Image (cartoon, rainbow, N blue to C red; front, side):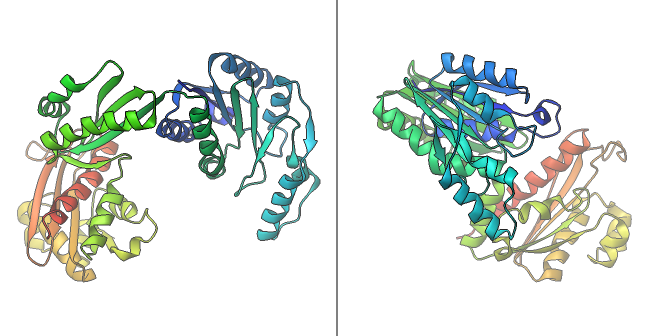
Length: 418
């Protein structure tokens, strides 16, 4: 089994100044190609820490990947420390310098001597071209061990992994006849983990000694993950397909997608498929739903716009919610949510209008409408449906769950279309 250790380098990670998204992304990518990630390490920019961590990791795994510390400033110490680990020295690498010149020409910048220093790499390494930055990736391949060093900038690291490191590791696995670990994840909504487990109980009978199952609950559903370890990709995929058949046979009504849990991609695909567009009217989420709709490139194909109607005055003046509705039922009511969704659809001339109005907290609740009460409206030319949920006492959780629930409700409506 090809085992890997990921080392992310940087004081900024340790003190919480930057969230370590690189390790999570890299772990997922390695897993997708059949590599078993056995450890994540986060270390400082201290050369001793870098040296000891790399040395120890190379004795414990077949593959070691570092991110960070390859930049041109004095705090970037990884490259020289790598030389110390492998008893090597830095040499000038003309192709890497040519890449730096190319990037600086595009950016209309002058190459300085400090920038030129980034074209120096350990003599025993293979340089990996960085399409988005000036620091090349580095690869050592000695005595059956593979070591990679990448920049810490996410777009640079991801490009190097996708274009260079992943293909190299796939070849490494096949050449060395390494067994693989593969996973398959199903995203279920509108169901609790215990209910899902009961539905797919037959899977437990199918699970062999080299396979695993995990139920990972989140705010609006469950991620169901299967893993299996086999001698080849083909055998692993066949085993996972066995499990998938049971999942879809028993729980297809609740499975919304596979892989990365991306509700926006799901709703975007459905809106594009049905040639529909949407506008939003938000109160307690303060524009969060509109922000989600515009995350993906090309979102103008299905998202038109929205209104943040945080006050009753804006609900009346911009969204034309009647004063009678607000006086009789309150801002947090299905009646108000209905008018918000219907009127924003008319205002923007869209196929769908989606509204959210609620009490996010921590204050503002009442016995009749406690904190966490959120009302939703979904409006089309043929209907307006409303819903009420309570998500609890925590403001941030309420806002997050409200945005996800609104998207799920729209997905439900889109799935009824022919």
